Image 1 (cartoon, rainbow, N blue to C red):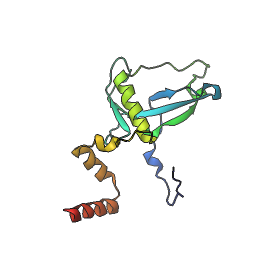
Image 2: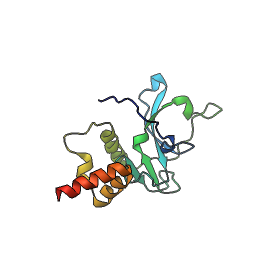
Image 3: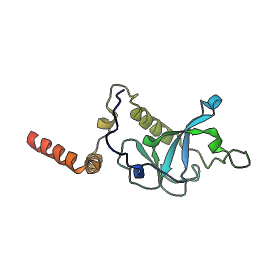
Length: 153
């Protein structure tokens, strides 16, 4: 793992805030009173990222609109955050389908760089995904990348 000194201010507007549904990934740290959670959003702002997974609204999962699991924003919660003011546990709104759980686990492994030898991103690359990734680069990096690719032609 590499460590970098922060050379510029992090833009806090890119971090999901407010009340959103979360996917509780693990409560294995229950003795420590911790759980890992992935926030969800109905915004498609991060839809092109390899660590974002779309989930359709269904009765089983309790979602009322198409949403995205933002795996790259996984966080650790104090289990007390999952309790109501009266001390009872928050009500579970639903459960994910197995295919959704598996897809989120894939993205989590990718995020944590725990993938086997294959390159997850390249294996799933599409023209649309490449275009979305290019659009998210800062203008000077985008220009440099485009010039480098044109030089190769």
